[in-house]
Length: 344
Ligand SMILES: [Zn+2]
Image (cartoon, protein in one colour):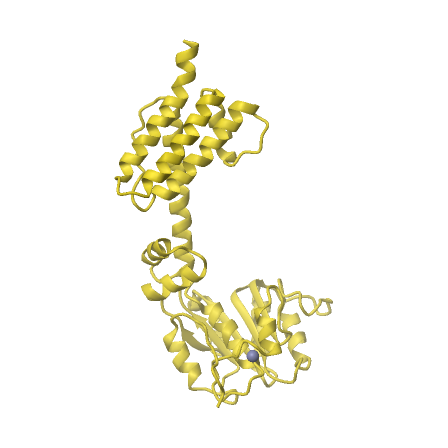
């Protein structure tokens, strides 16, 4: 009995079935993980490596105990198991005799790979090479790897990942067993995004926008955040300048985040007005625009901050988001125009 082993990878049912039916004796020595970016190809490869190097005896190929010395090396941030080499990006053929430390895997060359893997394994078990979305800098680099695959030392498993299997040299591709990774389901995307630290609503939105790719979901959420911030900032500047803004940004989903942006800009506006320009600003990119706003008397500043606190409280009730935004707009307008009224 192997006990409760984990194999913590979302989706990838086909790959799980395929490797689940293999053993350390029957696993092939070279694989190509293909599929769109951000669906978990490299994550699967890392967990497969951890499974193969886990010291807990098991009849299952996929799974690790998370407690042995080997697993500890996979868990530690920045640490690396000496029998697991991961490299991403361009692969050069490399100088024949360049010295390089074992751990410096950032820009491994084909020749270094050959040299690394011609040495004995650290603990006498299997060794794994993950070449993530690798691009060959030259045909020579690809040929050097091809030669390595043809004469792979026993116990070495090489995994290449790529979103474009068609871009590989046919001679190289023919050496690799292709395992396809389809887009993640919405619920798997949702789980992964939550584990990455996104809130429930954001993860749901990301899963809907990502089309099964975590990379795409994260980008879409970033862009959404950035455009919300830009919209709210433009609205803030217009409102504080006493102009009637045509922009409407407040919805149930955007209200909290929008109010955060408003507060950040308001603090910068206030600090800038009270102390002059040379202060650390929360929103550097709006420093100039905020500097052009009317300056605020301390009393007005305190009043504005109190109104923004009120707005946050109202936002937690059933009051429509647009009404909360209008309340904030009036507060900004009042703060900005108070000065000009006095000086008029
Ligand atoms: Zn283990």
